[in-house]
Each structure stands twice: as structure tokens, then as C-alpha cells.
Length: 116
Image: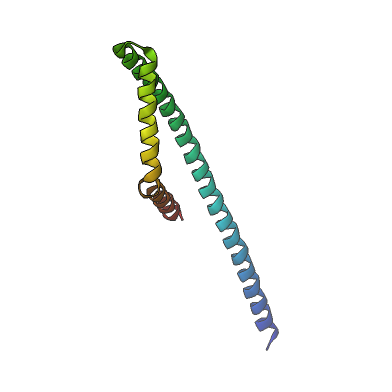
């Protein structure tokens, strides 16, 4: 082998090393981008969920007071609303995997795979 072949091989090795470093840096930036998108999406969704929970809390209190006034005793309205939420909890517990966990997991996986 001649000296020019040695320098060509050295240049090729150097280019491969640079390519590997740049590829690694690119993957790090992509992962960082996805993490930021996931975090900001979670944060904005959390804000919306908090406002929605406050709305339902106020609506529940209003319905309980209305029902209590209609039934003649305020506590009856709160018992009825509490029973409704207990029934809703029991139903959601039994159907949680089928109706909540699986679709939510699939949605998160689709979002992550579409971003990559």
C-alpha cells in the first residue's frame, strides 16, 4: 500500500467517526424534542383537566342543592349525587381496562410513533 492509500483510509475513518458523532447528536436532539412535546402536551392537558374538574365540582354541588330543595331536605340531594358518583366509580372500575387503559395506551403509542 502506498502512503496515499493510508491517508485515504485515515480520512475515511475520520469521516465515519464524524458521521457517528453527528448521528448520535441528532438522535439526542430528537429524543429531547419528543420529551419536550410530551411534557408540554401533558402540562396543557393537565390545565384543561383541572378546569373541567372544577366545572363538574360546581355542577355537582348545584345539582345536589337543587335536588335537596326539591326533596325538602338539602342532605338528600347530596346523598343522591354521591350515590351517582359511587355507581359511576363502580362501572368505571369494571370497564377501566377495556374502555380507558387500552385506548389511552394506544393513543400514546400512536403519538410517539408518529413523531419518530
